[in-house]
Length: 192
Image (cartoon, rainbow, N blue to C red; front, top):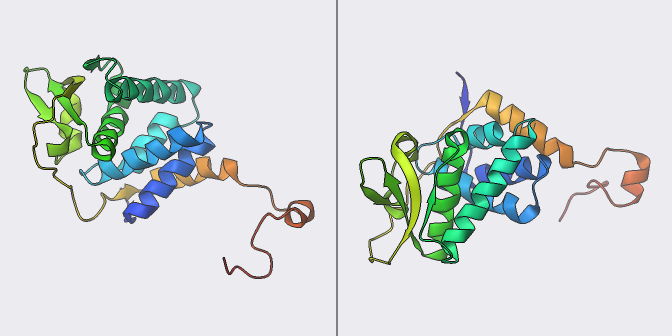
């Protein structure tokens, strides 16, 4: 397997563009970009996870929207716990929750099959969570310090990278004289 190293900015941007290309709303696409950064900082090939969830099947996009709604339910306090029903896209759900916890300062935690509770702010390797995860919970703030993750994003598989670029390309305007006349493209200079 050949890999490529991206910066965190590239991981976030490519995940966001991939989500837009898959037809998700821009706000959800932004959340997926943040989730990809969170996952990548914790040893997961986030681009592969996003492509697997949003590939060429509509059920993946629906699962992501459902997972995003579940994280929103936790963040707004409507529920103290949401169960994990779909293990196929479970890592993306963990990423969405981890990013939401980081961005909002909430104490979201993973409830494991053995009964242990692990605050997402303390997770250093997200790929280990998926096997034992039963639910995500909102806990009272316990003042635990935040563990930032790796200084370098996890490597991305080149096949997943190419698939992500393919999904992102769905949002591009076709090059034509008409589209250029209407402002598409950089024109003769690109100084913005």
